[in-house]
Length: 242
Image 1: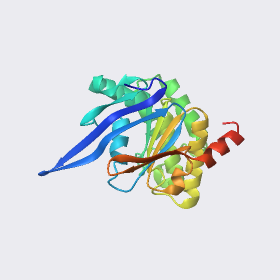
Image 2: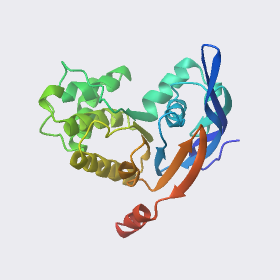
Image 3: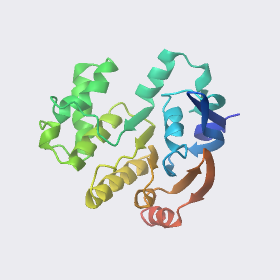
């Protein structure tokens, strides 16, 4: 049963992939709750199950067994159209490789999910400008990806993820293609977004990235190995009134 106070609930999740005559158990009975407004880092080495969990949280895949709830709704009870609406309206995705359209400028890239949502053109343009300004790119809206640095491209990707007012920001190795300085800038931006009430879930294998989260969940062999609060981040939040 879902935790009523959690925006993400998992109960006894199992994910098995069949490869030839072998079965790979990517997730092995995972149960966890993430409350609205948390900043969680999901960590672990390659093959630990963290990416499989991300695909389930993002409604991109279904578990072999077990159940997952987003905002109190069981994903197993949703149709494909319902799941598509959930991904478009509740969850914002940020990926390692940015996934921007090369021939479109930043403004056009951010407008794309808003167009799919069939919003009024005036609303689309206003929201695209708003989120680009939010991530510090108000003066770069007419630049194409190749005219932007890696950090600026990731900011465009974050703005695009924020365009439909998601309650959850799901980031898969969001700093994997960035240098140390730019990584810090992007993670500070995610902390700021979290302080505004967005639930942030970051998939990472880098301790330096996980340090920005207030909670760290470590996976190994498809199971949760540890689930701990990050005292330093929590103290920092308290000091800033978070």
